[in-house]
Image (cartoon, rainbow, N blue to C red; front, side, top):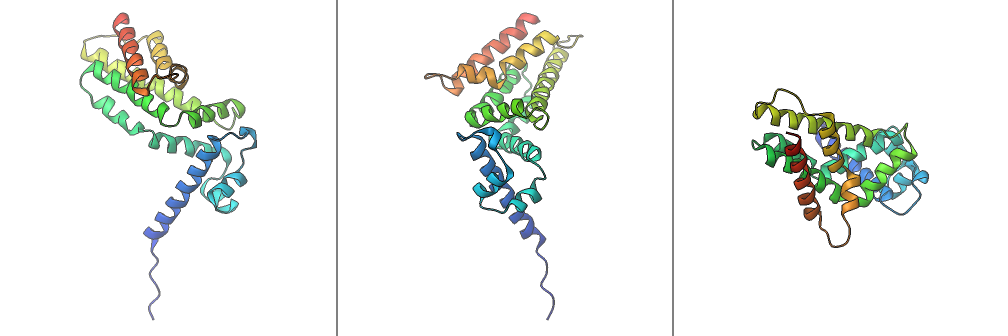
Length: 204
């Protein structure tokens, strides 16, 4: 009898399902009410219904798992819309789309995102993810403003003050502080978009 053919695609699909299961378990634990300092690979394995070795096979350390969780959250939160930001020909609309994209991401799971950022304070050496992503956000703003200046014939790049101000307006902390009472995520995005436009026009 011929040997059974190895189904690598099915194995990959199962591995991806397990990976997502682990990441969702991690998201639930991080977003819960427990002490973040007690977060462990064993706790994640128990929540996901898999063995501890399975978690270590997929993610070799807690730092790697947290980094993967940040990427998972970005996927869940619609960060793929950043492509639309840089394809938008109108500078003001592009800036508004940038603000709306980050506002939508922050709104997608505020509690978990708040606690992920707190983990960056608790474990600064092991969780560089939030800091790295903040740097990436600043770079995206700088690139967008540079393209805006090029379209309008501006010879100089955006000032550090304008980039820093827009980074503040698109940060989780700003979004979170404005999201209270009956103010919706869309209302916060509109407010921040108006402020971002005002900052850029005032600097130009």
